[in-house]
Length: 120
Image (cartoon, rainbow, N blue to C red; front, top):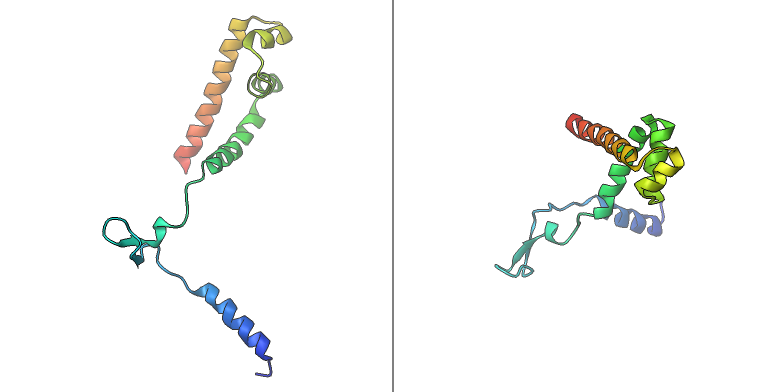
């Protein structure tokens, strides 16, 4: 083949990447109950942060559909952590009106998120 020994060794090492094992493959002597576990018991965990990333990517287009005022209200309340009374002062309306606006905006976002889950 006219290739060097180093290249053959490198190819052999690379070929190991194509061997796979079933996640249900039994591993003897590892389990606490019957001396047997499966490979899946030792790899992979559910990452809580991943759900947040997925939610963020699902929520971003819904936020973009909101009016500038609604986005500002959500930003003030949940990013800057302003109270409803403080938001009302900035918008020139009552705290009660801000409460109703936030409730309406969140309901719209929730509906969009749940609708997206139903389509998947």
